[in-house]
Structures are given as structure tokens and as C-alpha cells.
Length: 323
Image (cartoon, rainbow, N blue to C red; front, side, top):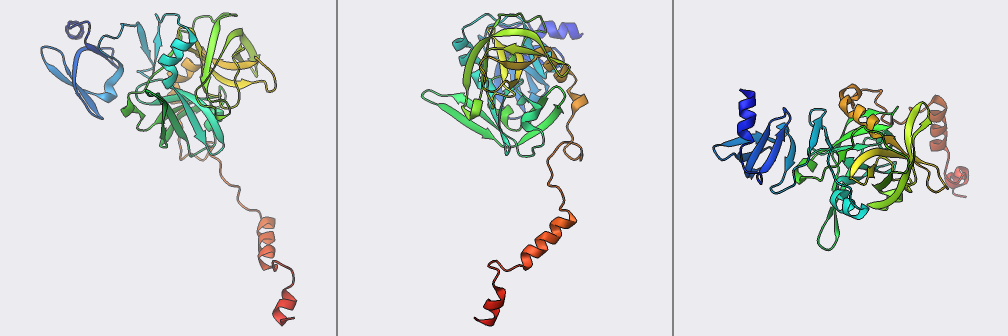
């Protein structure tokens, strides 16, 4: 029965909008209506009401069919047949999928991995922070438009691999540009790569380089070493290949040098996302890493009392006597 249903749902026009559900079923037809919680799709022989929460992937009418592997119940996608393009072409297509992350402690980068507004960044960008904001950049006719989202939830965090998963509330209503991940196939020395991020707060900066080595060891973990210039603010941003696939997450660079950048490999990123429930963030847990002010010590309190009792100018006696 399930096979018959899937075959029936695929028997519509090749130019129709395509919706892939989280259970793997594909719906092809004209989208008649959409609101914040559902879409109504005309399949030709009937209409169906599809909750947005059940949708893993959507393609617009006339879009070229791409081979996309949905993994981690629709958390992210892996494209298998993207063509090699210039950096400029890739940036125009994918740049809106890279975001600016701001906290009271500083700035970082991130990238959108699904239509629900889930964003990957480094753990050190948001660790210990409660007030997180995400700025999305949209290319307009004459300028770059910014939209800032200030309700951001931490879904999962793993400080050991320096990765975090965020949910940007409200972003799902904006049909955000989503980036896809590369397959966990070998990444070779000399491969061309480019980074998009916000170094030192300079928004949507692009830098290009090559893979210097694909297995540089630090602290028991392997990293991609590359020559694309990155600086503070690039942390959490994507490292792309020329197929526009994320092959790593930039997380550190050697200061005052050129061409010594490092990225967490996509294999580690996919493992984190596939098992993100194991790293689920609980905001009410006192061990979550939120920064709290240390309670004052007895000496601090006594000093504060002495300071309050001491006249500001040290001449209380003369002031009281009027002399």
C-alpha cells in the first residue's frame, strides 16, 4: 500500500513543486496555499493538507532535480550531484545561508541547515551566553538587507568538538536559504575551498584558499588545515568546496600569520547532528555552562560596608561642625 501511494504521488508533472516528507514520501503538485503551519498541495486528483513540521525538503517549480540524501530525520541534507562552480557563483547562491551570531561577549558566524531555521556554529561562540541573536542577510536589488532575530534557542552543544546547534525562532517563516553538507568522502590536499563569515564583524566576507592537510591533529582531534584567511568572527562559519558543499566548520586560526586556518571536518559535524539528542541543552540545568556572577565573599561584603560608611571626601568632621 505504501509503495502504491508513493508511486501515485510521483505521477504528476515534472515541473510541479516537490515536497519531501520526513518519512521519505515525495509529493509533487501545485502549492495552492501556505501559512505559518501548513501548505495545501494540489496533486491533480485531490488536495492534501501538509503540516510544515512534517516537511523535510522543498523544491520550487522548474528547479533542477538534485540528488539529495535526507539524514538525521530531516535535520540536514547531503547533496550528491552539485556541479563545480566559481566562488562568485557559489556565494551568490549560498551566501544568504550564512549568518552573523552575536552575544554580549562577541561575534561569530553560523550557517542554516534546514527550513526550520536550525543553525550550526561553534560551541565557543555561544557557550556561557543567555542572550544570543542571529542576523540573516538577504540580497536585495540595490543593497543587502539585514534581519535580526533575537529569540534563539540552544538545541545541543558539545564543547569537546566545539559544535553547537541553534534554533532561530521565526526564521522558518522566511523560507531561508539552506546549505547542504558534503559526503564524508576523503578531502584531498590541494582542493580549492572558500569561507564565508564575519571576521572582526565585517559581514559576509569571503576568502579563498586550498586544503593544506586533511588530518592535522590537535588535542586528540583531527582538523582540516587550509589557507583561506579567517579571523575572529569567522568562528562557526562554513568552509565550502567548489561544489557549494560544506566540508568543515571554521573554528580557529593562528594569529599574526597568513594561511593557517583550521576547520572541524564534515564527518565530525554529521556525527554531532546525527546524535544531537545526546548533547541536548537544558537551560534549567545548573551545569549548562551559563555564566553566573560569583556570590560575594565575606571580605567583599565588609569592604563594601566600609566604603559606604566612609565619606566621599574624607572630611566629614569639618563638614559636620560647619568649619
